[in-house]
Length: 313
Image (cartoon, rainbow, N blue to C red):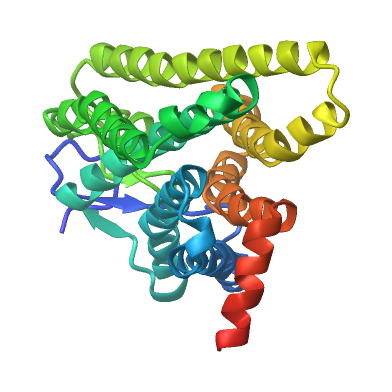
């Protein structure tokens, strides 16, 4: 096993993850809280997936996209939280190179997949409100299948070089990662090679994917707002808010948490080191938990489906 020191100059064979270095005595209480929070998104998203699977009335394009979002949330939770709990409960801080870079790939690709899924859902709402008569011919099962392939292929392809570039570096500065996951930034800092290109690629690729999704979402909602304001039909605004409200709330939460996370990482030198770690963990718990809850509370069909599911138990 590699020496757990950041002062070592010998090559390392694994990394050590450090969670909340300033609150070691509170780890058991933190683990209990995280365990409960972990069960919430896992239970909520699993319930939503089962409900959509069993309810024939929910076998529609929008709910298929919502299922994709739930699957992405589940994978992200399983990628991050179990390892954090293993550190808290069993002091299993070590993580192998392959596991670290696999985690890095999932973190980068699935985050942008979620953003892209929100973009496709925004297009679904745009067609439903701006071109309602053409909706059945545009938003079909085939469209959803192609959209899912596009979401997965594009983001996996663009995100793959991030762990590949990190895996090619020589790690001889130490093996302690002051984070609870293998982020590219945290891992690359331990390299004795030049990491300028790695940082540049991740910055350009990440913000190109997230930025383009955000621009397309804004354009979709701009057209929706234009059509709604021009419509003279009674209840048009209420109908649009009912259809788009849940989606807008989720995008707002996703963007806000991500923005706070970016700002805290940029200001890492001026804030306690535990703050970015905590926000990183909450970013993989709060949005995944709220996604199915918001849609479940605001969508009549999903509420009815969950009630039917509970009656079957």
